Length: 141
Image (cartoon, rainbow, N blue to C red):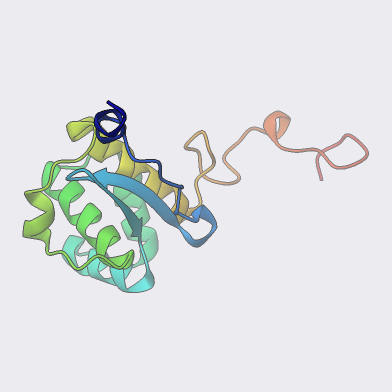
């Protein structure tokens, strides 16, 4: 039953997100979507969280103490920044692949690519000198 097998397989998709542009990809309600915290999305988050600046916003997110409503707001802003026309209420009703942990992972990735965190979650320059890349001569610059 060749046709039946095809229906049971997960669709083959290409990762469309460009991390260099601050994009991440997530599966919400069974559909792959692009999220991006554009300047407009960041301005929306500053207003929503009462942040005075991007630094204040980044510090709030770096605390790691986000409520589920915060996750919903960040996901919604990221989805709108990625070109999806969804309200916060729409996003609150969506199922995120991986549940709450999956939503937290997506938000973490989105914040990391937006605010420039290293792959290990540290901010650029937060590594000990021995962990930094060395120049050609084998010493740190």
